[in-house]
Length: 155
Length: 389
Ligand SMILES: Cc1cc2nc3c(=O)[nH]c(=O)nc-3n(C[C@H](O)[C@H](O)[C@H](O)COP(=O)(O)O)c2cc1C
Ligand code: SF4
Ligand code: FES
Image (cartoon, rainbow over all chains, first blue to last red; front, side, top):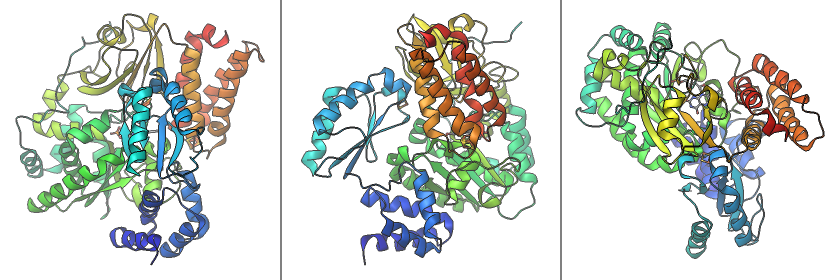
């Protein structure tokens, strides 16, 4: 059985086969693969007895349910006002330079994608970024690079 | 004479001392649900998620629905820019949130509860799951048939709007529904549902413990009790503070400003901007400027054009696109101030834009589109020069 099939079966055991299981199922796939491809969405549609269009329609609504391939680690830098005032532009600049990509792109080795997002709920400790689910508040250009390096050495 | 209070720190939400959580829940469950509801109404507690609907009344409406299946939903989608208190509450005192949900479930007759946690707070899931397991088990032991489960969002601000949140939980696009029917009649899966903000649920829990009187004593006639504020921007003391309601913006700025505060944005991107001249006569509360808790301070080094531009970008991205006034309106307001700034349009064009924002207030389907006028009109009105030049 493929990974995705396993995830689908596991989610059905926990959440049932009703449509309410759709978000948890898509989220569980993204948790492992960092994005959803057409095959995943068709498999989900079959499992929950939905049309593929309904699954695509739902997935495409949500920022975190990416339908584009992304790197192993998705960096999301907050661009909303408090982080803006705290210097998020500088953080984005050093990350772009260090990773040699622009916002919206993925490194060639598929390790990192760099994205910007709206308020992450750490406005008193900006600038802040997420790397997958982990939060890094009170960034400085130096700490931002150290954090990225720590992911590289984890591989 | 305007009724207002001096700024005062309060310790209700995060306080853990002096009581046993399950004793409070058990005591509530030994009382008549109607009495619990009248306490809640009597306390004057209003929703802390932004809209400010009286909590006791909401519970009562759901209780009055004759349906076997009802739900309690905790709104932990916290996406309003400048708000971060719900994260801290769920991190520090999650059991008090669960306790509030359990008491609500008992009063309205719900067997299932959900916490809808924004995807940005996924890091809280392991801890919350563990605590929920223990809590659910303890509820069984004291004989309440109610189970709380966790659901996650996936990065959409609009899913904080209650009906969009239900759509999302139902596996659909997070597009707000028409209202009425309201959630207390048709909420999650079309069943009567009480949806409350994280902080509201903790206050509900604490009112069961300290009684409505102690709560009501604080605040003003229209804004009872205290509230948790998320404070950011140009301040030497950013962070989370629980304060008595009813203080003026002036008092607030004296405590949290950096000595050079030019404006305070109260209520996040969808709130209003208070300029310095209005600090003394603006009350932070439902009678003045209401807030879900976001307080952003700006000093004189900040360009209000940049602030407004950032908010409009936010709305343009987060509009669900379902209705035209909001989808097109947000884009036009953003393009509009850009073109005035560049000189492609005359300053008088701002008047047209203000008209558009006011039209959105009337014509947009949900609170997102309806709120854009709050920051737009207040910033244009008070900082026109900064927008033009
Ligand atoms: C665009 C939009 C976003 C919202 N986001 C939230 C949110 O993140 N958290 C919240 O509690 N309420 C949010 N609300 C308000 C909810 O619709 C609802 O009024 C609230 O959850 C009710 O709880 P309360 O009465 O305890 O405040 C939002 C409303 C709108 C229009
Ligand atoms: S007002 Fe905006 S967010 Fe609300 S339903 Fe219309 S398009 Fe969607
Ligand atoms: S503005 Fe960046 S976390 Fe809120």
